[in-house]
Structures are given as C-alpha cells and as structure tokens.
Length: 603
Image 1 (cartoon, rainbow, N blue to C red):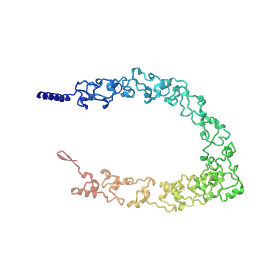
Image 2: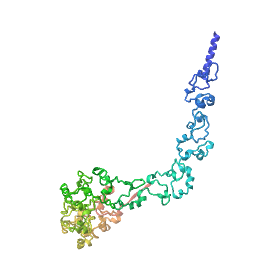
Image 3: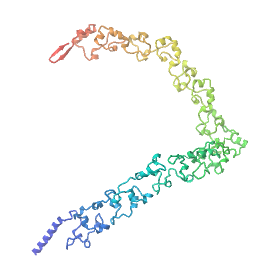
Image 4: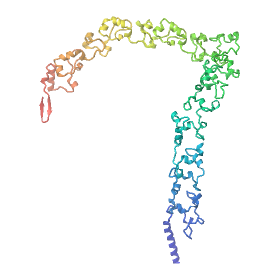
C-alpha cells in the first residue's frame, strides 16, 4: 500500500513538473487532453478534441492538409503568425503589396479573375486595355513582378503621341491628356474613336468630315459659338431678316441642332418682349408673320392689323388716359401684357410721370420706340440747354444734368442753391452775379481762390504787389466792400504783443507779407551781435532771444539761472550773480576748475 502511494505521488509530481516545462509555451489555453491521450504524446487528428476553427486562423483549402510543424516549427503555438508573407515567400518582390488574399485564395495560387481584380484597381481595363496582353504594360510579368505604372495615357503612349503626323500632335501643341480627344474605352486611335463630348456631334452636327468645320486644319482649334460658323447663314436670312431686325447672334435662342434650321421658335419672346406664348395671345396665332408683317425687319409690328380700331370706341375707352392718341399704333406701350387689365402704368416704372411730364404725349419722349428710352433729362431737353441765355449754360460750362437746378414742374424758377450745393454762400458783393463772372468756362470745376477772381483789384492796389501782400484776400477784406480792410494779426501764428504792437508792418515784413519768419533772431540778430553786457557772441549765449527777453523790452532780462541751467547761484555764487546783473559780467573773472587725480587743477 505504501509502495502504491509512492508511485502515485511520483506520477503527480512528474505531471506538475511536465506542466511547468511544456514545449508549447506558457500561453497555451487548451488542455493537453484536447490533443494528446494517455497512450502517447503523438498528435492524431482522428482522436484529438482540438479544432483549429477555435483559433483566429481557420484551416481552409491547402492549409487543412498542411502538417502542423510546417507552420508551428517551434511548437510554441503563440509564436505562429497569421499573415501570408510570414510563411510564404513574396514571389512578386513587393510590387503588388503584402496582402496575398487580394489575388490568391487558400485553395490555389492560380489567379483566375485577373481582369476582375484589375477593375478594382486605380486603372480599370476598358476598351483595348481589356484585351491587351499583360506583358505589353508590365514588362517584368515573366518574373512575376508587376511594378506600379503611371495611370495617365501619356505615361504609356508617349511614343504614339510623338509619332502621329495626321495631325502632328507635337507641332500643333496638342494636350498630352489623351482622353481630351480619345476615348479610354475605345479600341482604336482613329477619328471614329475621338472623344468629342466637349462639343457633341449630334443631329445637324453629326458630320463625317472633320474639315467641314476645321477649315484651317484639324489641328487648329475653333470656336464653339454657333455664330462663328453660321455667320453666313445669319447674314443671308431674309424671312425674317436677322440683320435688319437686330436679332441676337446667339442662334440657340431660336434654333436647335436639328438637321434643318426650321422650324425656329423664339421662346424668349414672353420674357423679353410681348407675351405671345401665354396670356391672351396664347394659341391666337400660327406664325410670326401675323404680327410682324414686314419680314425685312421684325422691329416693326402692328397691333391694329389684328385688333378692331374704331375711333369713337377707342376715344371712349381711353378717356382721361395720359398721352393717348387715336393715330398712335403703339398699343404695346400701354398694354405690355396684351390685355386691358394690365394696362401700362408709367408710375410703376423707374420714371414716374410728375409735373409737366404728366401732360406730355408719349411720342414726344418715345420718338424711337418704347424700348430703351433714356431717363436722362438731357436726352430730351438738349435744345433748351443750348438755347438758355440767363445764364448762358454753354458758355458758363453749366452741367447738363438738368435736375441739379430744375424740377419737373417748370424750368423757371431754378431751385439751384449755391450755398448748400457748393459750400460757397453768395452774399453781399457776391450776390446777383452771373455764373460766368466767377466760373470762367466751366461750373464743374469752380475757382475757390479769391485772388483768381480779383486779380485786377490786386494789381490796382500798388502796395499789394510791391509789398507782396498775401493773396488770401479774406485775411483783410470782407464780401461787403473792399474798403475798410482790417487785418487781425492776432489770428495768425504770431500774435502782436508788447513792443510789437506799435511796430510798423514794414519793419518786419521787409520782403513782403508772405513767408515772414517768426523767429526773434530773424529781426533782432543785429542786437544780438552788438550786445556787450554781457557780450552774447563771446559768451556763446543762445540766439533764441525769447529765452531771456520779452516782447515788452530788452531790459530787464528774465533769465533764471536756476530753472534754465539747473545750477542755483547761492552763497558765494550769488555775488557773481549780482555783478552779472549789474553789468560786471566778464568771462575772465571766472576761473574754471576741474578735478584730476590727487589735486584740484585750475584752468
């Protein structure tokens, strides 16, 4: 019994030791009995409970028949990798990426859907590319290498671009973006494969000969504008005459690309002119010629050719209507929508009829039709402007913007306000003047400098010229009269104080009244140079007279040594100060001292 217990203990101990020294590593989560039996350690698929489907890598295809040791070479299962390249050599030398599953399956290395795979790439195989041999583009396909290629046409077809002569792409400077002319799904380079989607060749443009449009050579670009090709058709059209009627050269407004120019249909008629496709006129006509009776010009049309025009009835219906005239055939001017309810109301436009305009006949302003009539006063009233004499508008250069001075009520009186409009009030001597007296030739650039108007008076006053008086007349004169001039010097930058008040003007203004200096030294430099008590020049005193003197008198001086120099004259210095103030200032009386190492030196 003790022997049996010993054997059991040894087996248990051996099991513990074996578990600690497992050849599968310490991360294995499965039980030993899932793969092994007590009969032996050898793994048997037939007896094993373990299923690889319980891992992150299911055994499919050829992997199911592969020996475990082929992948688990160390028997440490946690070291096994799940990427293809971890076990399989990259035969493509990293030219198609590491994900083998994009092309291959676990069943076989053979790829049966190469075209389908290529369609999911950055260059789907279309047209001739779908039937091309792989080696035509991938030159290393024999080595199983598929180097990444450029996806632009020119990357592969550079030689084709440079070799073509009809037309010569290089000389013509054609774009190297081949798809601009050629289709990527085409099977040939010929004209039948040209991508003309930028200008669809359909209906009337479905031509077979490129030279029909490219008359100067196929390599010469042409305009996509209809008129540039069909100008001859536009000019030769007589029913209606496109030129005489001023038709738009945008052919698509009336025509389509159908093989024939007819039938033309101007659907913009309602939006731009008169509603003939809608409203009262819808379905009431069959051809344009019913209203436009003169095919040589569609600018001419008549309403009364279709509508009853009885004078007594018309007079009755239009009683009290401004500008009505039975003889006028301009029904459209007042009935732009073709019905009575939508009669034209001029006050709803940008030019309401006010004042004298309310009684003006329509034809007086709309002499050339009702479309595009100018709203400028001068467009109708140029004659009145030219004939005006009080003032003469032409000679005075008055603006032809009539509304600046006049109203719609009447030409007279004018409501021009010189003060508020120009900022120059016409008072006293300026009142009652003709515009031309001040405005020499034009009112758009008025002369605001007084001297420009009063040059004669300046010349008559001899002292003004000889003494170079300032030309700012208003400094001395007023608009009331030239006499009694009064110049206030205190309003200038140099007010007159002290002795300056009684000084004659010419004493300072020796060279005229403009540009006179305000510096004391400009007038008193001689007094500065001759001063002896103290000698200003020898002492190096500043020539800024106002530092020591006032305008009342030269003496006494108000020089303050303390505030001016920062050196207070006290005690022993004060005596010198007194002598200086009494006129005993002499530079030789003062000895200047300077400190030097070890002693005081006198200089």
